[in-house]
Length: 337
Figure (cartoon, rainbow, N blue to C red):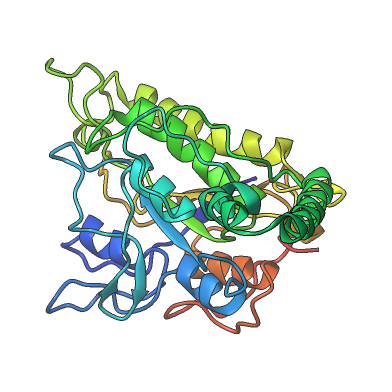
């Protein structure tokens, strides 16, 4: 679903990206003196209210910070007023957080069943007990394995088979995003979390070491030939996540059907070529929120604060909210139902 026509409402005239990125997912302008966010962002609001039963109420992700034009200054994810979220910008670090293990090399894979996780402890215990106790232990372990198999047959959560996880500070956008996508899909399949944000702005030049510019710099020249290449690459990244969600079973539907996935930008290009426009912002929304949202539409709301859309998303996700940010007071007509 494509939305457009929205008005950005968190930006002061001069600071552009700083204000809009800090305030985009909270709906509040950042603190003028310190230039840090003044409120919790959407993924943490939803995580605090709806995600406490999962291992991670929310996760804030990004592609690796290995490029000079990709930095933390305008961090878009905040757990509260002036409280930065811990953004995970490396696939190996995300895997370690999700699985509770240290990936020491690219050959190490995660075994995700309870018995696999405690294999070393089980082996040590088996050597210490007598024959009668060993028989009872085997019966108990077999019953756990049967329960795991029953659960696995009704969901998409299977032992992680995502292949090698790239290691190090900057494995490159392509490899990093492939691994991040697999880990994001797996996190939803196994209900490790229900709320994730991922920051994929400011990609490095198309030709490393060449004369090409990063996507940020390209965006200041609307006629630059690489602009469409950067946009297409980001949409391909998003598509990979959506396809994984669509293929993942959740009850009698898919994870995509039961989710809402939002692709957003903090500024847009004005008719006269200004790359920091605050009007006619576009958003893309995928997923049906369990049937609450009808997709496949193009909705235009000229001049409406984008915060009304964010309020509508909160409600569709099950949050009992009556506002979002400074001026998100009304549910968008025609979006839900």
